[in-house]
Length: 134
Image (tube, rainbow, N blue to C red; front, side, top):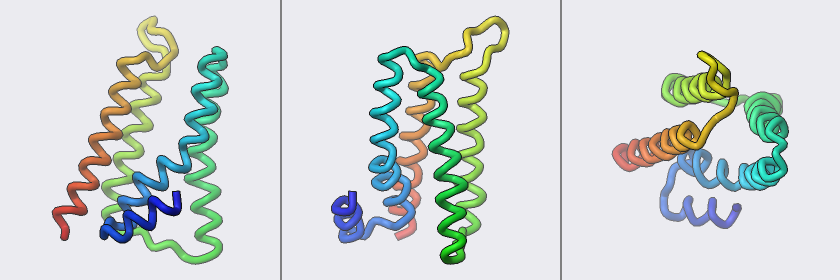
C-alpha cells in the first residue's frame, strides 16, 4: 500500500484522492476477505457487524485518535460534499437492508450493484474534480 501511495504522489495525485482510493481500498481488502468468507458460511450477521463496526471504528476511533494527536483541519467541501454523500449512501444502504412492505431484510444483488455503482461514480467524480482543479 505504501508503494502505491508513493507512486500516486509522484504522479501528482492529491492526498484526498489517494485517501479515497488507494488507502481506502488497501485498508478495506482484509475486511472484504473476511466478509466474503462469512458470506460463504451463511453468517450474514458477521458481514453486517464487520461493515458497521469497521465504519464506526474508522470514523470515530481513528479520526478521534488523530484529532487527539494533532488538530485536523477539514475543508468546507469535505464537510458539505463528502459527508453528505456518505450520509446519503448510508441511508440508502439502511433503506435497502430493512424490511418494508413484506420485503425480505437483505441487500440483494441489484441493490449491492447500485451501491457499488454509486461508489464508482463518486470516486470518478472526485478524480474529475481534482483533474479539473489543476
